[in-house]
Amino acid sequence: MSEQRSPVRDAFRKYLLLLRLQFMTRFASLTPSAIRDAWKDKGRKKTVQTVAILFLIVYVACFVVFLEWKLTDALIMLGQPSLLISLSVMASMLFTLLYGIFYLMSSLYFNRDTALLAALPIRDR
Image (cartoon, rainbow, N blue to C red; front, side):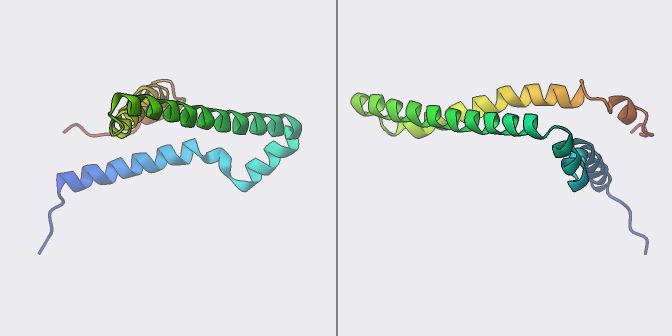
């Protein structure tokens, strides 16, 4: 008995292949030899950049904690401390949406492999 392939399953398989290709191109420079060569070439500059990025991450985390702390005090004075969770979730969703749009634009439209992906043999439906 021959099994027919589901169009959804084929589409999902093609999607996974494309996702794998994007992961491979995105993280191709994270091989151990490439990281070792980058540290040899730009050791001091790379260290300064890493420290600066870690400092910015800690700074932003402290700012968010301080902002939530002050917001909690204000909401307690208004008698609505349960709104903090809702406001935090809404703020994180808005943050994800805004940064997701810019990431999507850079990933799909300003990427170097767009010409490669456009040349792939894709059949019409």
